[in-house]
Image 1 (spheres, rainbow, N blue to C red):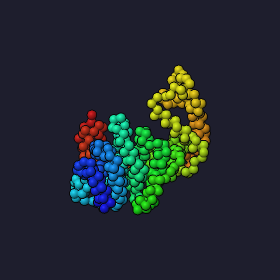
Image 2: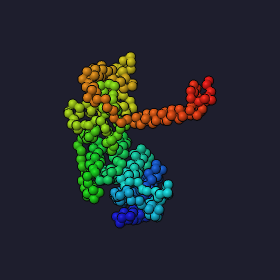
Image 3: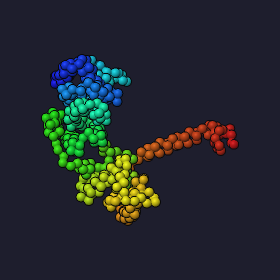
Image 4: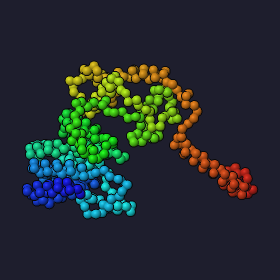
Length: 411
């Protein structure tokens, strides 16, 4: 345990001792270490329940806890995952670990996931306070919860950073939390914009941990005036993240759709580029407008009810005709009758322009089923050879139409 973390823990225990027994603070610190190592729902809720009951009632305790959470998150520094850690030692950092699994000592999670688990605890506290409402718990806890909310950008950036080492990413998990915070209205649109910019800036594998901590305040203070779906950077290929050699059957289905549009149908596996089709990374203004419109339409799927003021009429097939002429006519299942004709025209146009597979020749790339078929052929060949040798020794008595065995029994 670093000296900074020891000081933060001691400060928190001292602050709690002024208003109650210090043992509760020590137990909460142990529960936080346990949740960081073993992030189960029960461990997270145990921490959040203790924080809401004993900490949020006092502003000084909340500020002290906020510092402790930040220091605890920063204490999970990147390291060499090939070096095993003896978690059987009686230390706070090993709480929840130490079991022997398959003859090996249980190891802690990757550092950025430990920081993510701390973020889960804070998120559970804020969402719970938000859902209970001020009437159920009083204005003090609601006000002090805003103190914890102030550390969300820093904790989110810490949870995302992985550094030079190749780890599984925690970036999607943080984005999922941001979606929850937006849905629960914990954050305003401006706060979501700031949070997104901070998280996106922290997802950088070109800097070291020390450099990241040095510019952490700058990362958190990053402002993004407007977050659009089209601001997302395109990958080099439309394939599987972190697996550039993914086979064709694991690639996103849009690769097959693009092949159908450019080469025609039926599709040929041998024509599929390894890892998926390349993307040029250039997006024109018309495509940006289409993506933004599609994103806006997709959000309507989460509307609980359709505003009657938006509807002009509903026809006999259940198609909703909106007053807004830019919104397509859609029925209960989401189909747009307005777009059926256009879709057929586009499909017909693409079939006429399809280049075919003539330039690919008759060669085939290695297919997983080739190995299966080859194994089946070898098994059949071996069975036929064995059957033939058995006939010569009179072993064909139980075989229909046995020819070689003198004592062979035909039936």
